[in-house]
Image 1: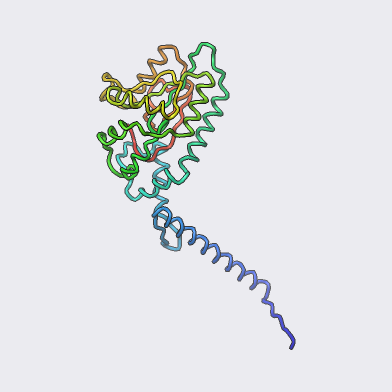
Image 2: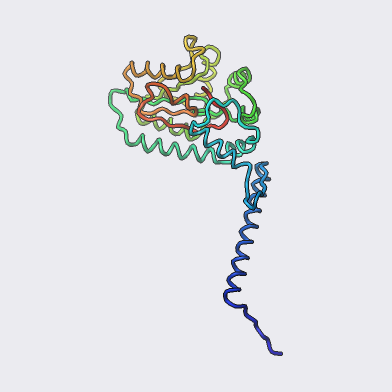
Length: 271
């Protein structure tokens, strides 16, 4: 028996190979979307031959929030619940934090602190030094409206875990000779001691001063309150080299310092 091998014309063979590669890519893409959908609860669908994801809107929304193009928002869009959950708990939040802290450290290493002890940094507290993600998990990651009484009850437990990247930054700043001020909108009368204890238990030891909201600042916006605190520090002679916070209201107003650094937080907005 003679074996006869038939070969397709070269042009037709190339066309078939291209079609096979195209189909393989489509299969891999659909497989990825199926796995993504199962892992995050976000459904993928096709319209007009273009693969679309409902997560795409949430990614755009988060970008707009972090760049302060969406302002005074009260809640996370309900369709973004699973997206925000995946972002906060799935590793991307930590990766974003680590990248930002690396940038801060690069900036810090270019500063030579003076011998007068007046070189300062300002760090916010909630979701900058310590995390409230476990509280917001019960509030559907910000899809539910802000609950002042609920948050106060949570804060009184004193169980907020440190954000590792920021704890490392804090320790480096202290070791490098900077005076670190922790400035928070938490009420001094009701949450002062529990906040100090919480921070101490999580390793925030050696800061120059923690400043909480006193009676004279009740009712003021975060921008007005923190601007006044920074103004007072500058009047004392401190040079503010950097200001770190998860809210734009931490980084706006007056006496901002030499540089500001915004940490990610898609769960809530503080005016």
